[in-house]
Image (tube, rainbow over all chains, first blue to last red; front, side, top):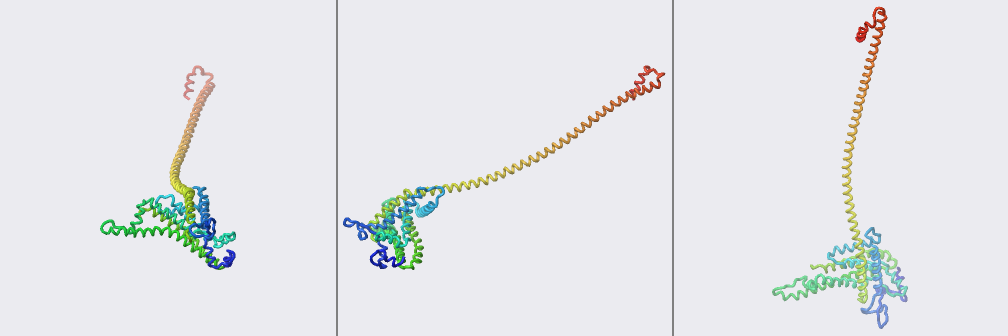
Length: 286
Length: 156
């Protein structure tokens, strides 16, 4: 992709590099305003990032279609090549879950598989050359198109908050409301229970609660921001490389090869931390 | 990077995908994997069992072959001794037969000799009588001297 090519595809005026980058990092948005559907000039919460939704649901659909197909015809005899690949992924996730989580829970393994494959597929969109899909979309009249759903903070937060809700749910379910509260207030400093020092107990409990509360809230925030940050930065570097004209070819290749590692690693980290957080929610000892 | 409705849409999508995976993907694939693991473990155990069975059968066979060899040797020994016996028996029987034939031939010869001797004796008596008749034709009465002549013939 030549720079001049890259700069022309929104029609009308010439794009500056800043506009080019900004264009690539803008979602296709839709919202309802004054009884009408409004595209791309939206503000506030009631806005939908159409491209993020479209690609993530498409990729999730590919995931459940492919895995569902294999699951439907899964044989315990000699497996075909596709079944072998799927089983390797499932086996890998299963091993990861069994290594980190020792309780009994029917949800965690399928959840981990979904997260791993879905996040991987969404990250994989990063390897498609940055102009292909946006320019194709521009050709058919779609003004903005951000193709990597995991560079949308909504997507990563949706996943990490779902995990967070599960963490809270399983914490209360397994430890009881009291146990969960104790975990948040009685660590890391045990409040004194007798003597004169008891007057300091509320202070210590408040201190513990702030500390543990931050630690608890940091889980979903760090989980989503880690993935978002990595993918956003990676995408930004792809866009910057795309501005370099002919020199982008070796650079793009190098970064793409490196990025294969990153997208797999990020999907794995997201899955692994999900397992670890849920495992902690099942542990009685803090 | 505003938080907006996409968050909810994504959450719904995720709940659906997780639910689908939990319901339709994970259990069949996992059960297929586990069934295969069981089958492989069974197969390995069966192979091991087969191997030990084979070894056992081998020693069994060796034992049987050794016994058979032993038996065969016994049979051969028995047969050869029996053959010797037969040969021996045949030899002795032949010997006896020969002896018997010899004996019978000998006795036959004896009888023949005796017969010939008797005949000869009778003839010699007749010749003697004839000679004596001729010599003494005139003076000797054959009837008067018959008992004398008979005694002479018996002495021959």
